[in-house]
Image 1 (cartoon, protein in one colour):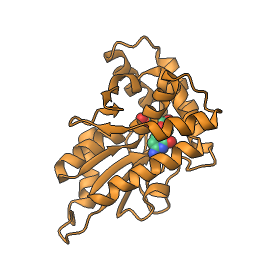
Image 2: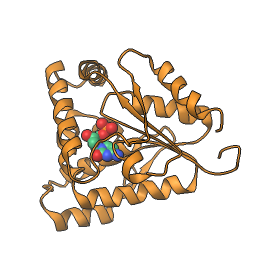
Image 3: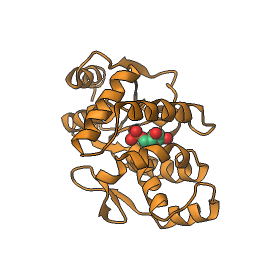
Image 4: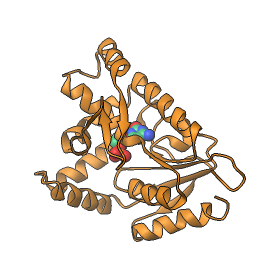
Length: 223
Ligand code: DC
């Protein structure tokens, strides 16, 4: 809650590897508000569909999957799919290579957007994703859009995947990021796009701490 007693929303959008989620987590902790990783929700739907062997084109089966899927987060913000922690699987290359197809489905976007609005309405919240400032919360009090040189983003993701023991090359990670950005920005429904009133932060040459500070500088005075 802000000093005026009202709940508020902070929207952070941008491509993968721009530092959105790490930054959002620290800002949430500092301000004592809820953090919602909306990318994890799209990744979770993708993993559930892959588990069930469902192609994205099978509309009725996807509707059925969505109707029966319970998403949640544990205390460490790890994703729970029907009560089971699947955090490490949603971050792997298999999900990264398929998520842009599943997340473009209107049924998937409608279901997850509704859940995100429900959570963001109840409490002060920081959400990171692709369409938070444009579609999910177009009236968010604070909006940020993060951009980073794609090579720097690929190197960050590559390091994270190696640390998790995944066998992947830097070229594969770079290709996946470029392709995901292309698909996520060109889809008809809620594309990755800077809201007109969002503040752009270029994170290519700044640390996570500096990214956090930039956001707190905008928000902190009134939060
Ligand atoms: O932030 P991330 O890389 O974990 O997101 C995974 C994918 O989910 C990304 O390629 C696009 C999609 N996504 C989306 O379409 N809308 C959001 N609000 C968040 C993520």
